[in-house]
Length: 76
Ligand SMILES: [Zn+2]
Image (cartoon, rainbow, N blue to C red):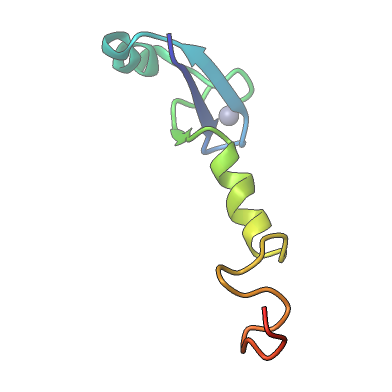
């Protein structure tokens, strides 16, 4: 059964629930934020995607094809 993650749009609380595909909408309708009681949620996809987007700008990954000399002057 897939795990779904939703973030409360009101207070940012993370809510997780497991449901089969056909029960997902049903679960979502009855879902309430434990913190503020809101039923306003935005789906979080994996969480990995969020951190992945962030680390992309931190310069952790090497650019494709380019090492230390993008011009190829070093003979690599
Ligand atoms: Zn909330």
